[in-house]
Image (cartoon, rainbow, N blue to C red; front, side, top):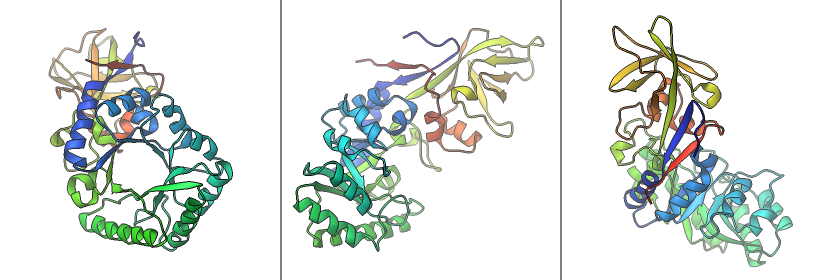
Length: 357
């Protein structure tokens, strides 16, 4: 593909496939593996990454909302595809026709689904809040929700194939308590007449550190993109390699020869380092980042070190050999998380997909 003049992102599909396969072996075990491709696969490109996930053995995919699910369904017609963020304007009829799985956490969502897609046996996953307070049904509302769902299932409007939740992952003790609350909620659902075949509560952290949370399916997100969600270990520590590397071209040197301008800035989605933190590397030499502007960043040399030549391409993060910073490094410099570093990359920055197959 033709690259933009001054910056681009390279996406390694072989690295992503290897990461998905590694997640299946080490995080899912005997459970099914759901891969999150939300937010355009964290800025990597949803269509290409969804296909690669399927090729690497993913059992299901997850996005956030119905519109994303419908867009992806055109290229992924067969894999289960879960979406769970809904509003009163959500098009449940379109979701049913696209055969999406819908995460449901309130009776109003069931009512809207039946109004828009009657008698279509739409697949739903009922969500219970187990302590994170992230759009799941509260415990006091859960009995009414599962009774409502059971009645609609008996009438042929829905099929409850799953019950799920999110863990807070603040401690193993808290996750164990949440798992017990989840199991209690499942028991209430079964007493109401439901027979879900898929129970899922674990994402990367719990799947790695608390295997009993894996249940029937684990949901894996940013770690398979080679970016760690953990504070105490890198993605590489866990056997996952970077999928995205971001590159900017050296545009010019200052007259004094001590600074260089690179062709990427915050207008391209680059998150500026705070408090003078941040560096780039070229031929093993680190150059501190001085400023990040809308369409460029400036680095400077120290001592008698020569600047990278004009026209040279500098890897800002994601070099699989480890010579550049990692996305997690940029996250620490910008006081955020690695997810945001990669997902913030602007749509106009070209993605160059590398595939050895």
